[in-house]
Image (tube, rainbow, N blue to C red; front, top):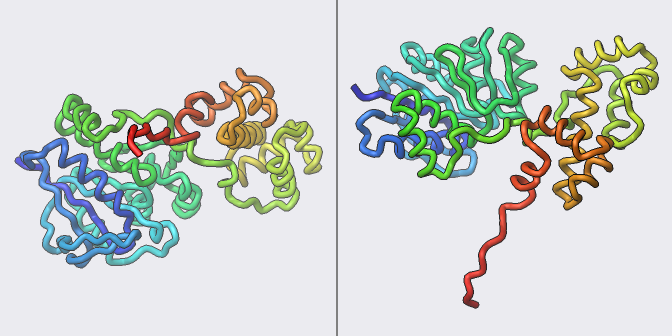
Length: 324
């Protein structure tokens, strides 16, 4: 029996959130012997993506019939809120009897709004993770992972992570060999090296309420290589180290020492991208040595400074054609 898979799309959706998974399922099953993929929208017909590209023939939810898997695409409007009632109704209708309910990027906001993610592990695009956590505190958010499954619910990180999620589904449905062949065809990793954190920055920390804490954080961000420590930071705020830790946990979501190290890792990343050597970046960011920087990168980014440099400094140079 073919597996009916609905990709739920809507005006303003991110095209790659739908086209990425669709290509994975097509390459895994080019003869459409296993997957019956259908594009579904709340009203059917034409859908215009955020880039202006159009999907011309989507199926209305009322005509979609029962599905085995539903994948909700994301879009910037979902994080901005409020969510469109028709989109929520469409997702709820499709999910009712589905064995798997998944989201790509900010599509997680739809699942969270419907209460599907309450008490469950989930993820979304790193840029919108703090908003999701604040709006839906019952979700057990894991902002660093690329994709995660909890029960019948699957969520994935930003945009291209929908491809990773679809590959995981293919592996579950058709086996690891098919998933591996599909990944090779798409020039993708079976498991992406590192998590989402390698793309984020400490500047994405939600704004804090305590003026003294905000002033302290601003000063550290301005000069990350300064003589900062938990003791000196507590003295600047005029509180005990224990109380400073409580403030950081309550308003930043992490202890002060870990936040300080993350700020310095972010500074090192910028220095590496500017062309500094790893040794010099370690010195200028306040972490001191190559080994300290390497350990900090492993803790916060799940990678090494040299791997980060190779992955993010450049896309590579075009090979000369040999002709004018």
